[in-house]
Image 1 (cartoon, helix red, strand yellow):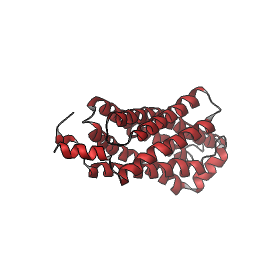
Image 2 (image 1 turned 45 degrees about the vertical axis):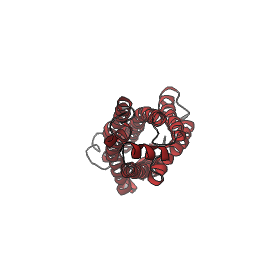
Image 3 (image 1 turned 120 degrees about the horizontal axis):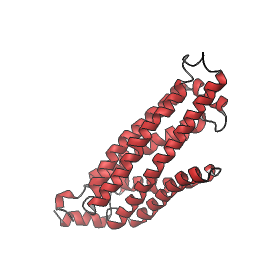
Image 4 (image 1 turned 135 degrees about the vertical axis):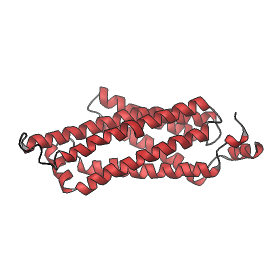
Length: 241
């Protein structure tokens, strides 16, 4: 265990919770509301019409996603600082998986989101492709975005599992949240691996990850914002001053 000054303050933990809350709001808006309402699975025409009629909303969804991924860089560093005194290597590995998941993979994947609107909103393809073909192209780009999101989710699932293990190895947060985050991580992995290997169960896997992530991630966020840390962690900080 490292020297006393390495233990995270309650202020730092609450700041982490605040950033986590902002990420949940931004990502939930982008994925749950924007793409959830505008993208019609299996219907390229309806999806194209929705995107063209709601271009500002579609662009806002990209913006809020990008904001969430930028905040995820901050969260990765803050979580590393919180857990570093207890297991530096594991904390670094956990932060690395989170950085790869959203700031890296999911950010680049936003190009598919953007181009799905761009191909519909430009005259560059009108001479070579029919309207139906352009709509199919846009739908294919949104499908590519979906699968890119799943790949990022696989890395994020590993991060959640490591996050849960770190909670078990430390006394920063109640061990209950360690179990909940293990469940969140398993949910993400089930969705990613299940959708790639067992197509046809997308609704079921989405429900699994939705419930597991909501309980685990929202739960730990609320705890960080309200309680900050366990009483035993607070006593440990006092003793090591």
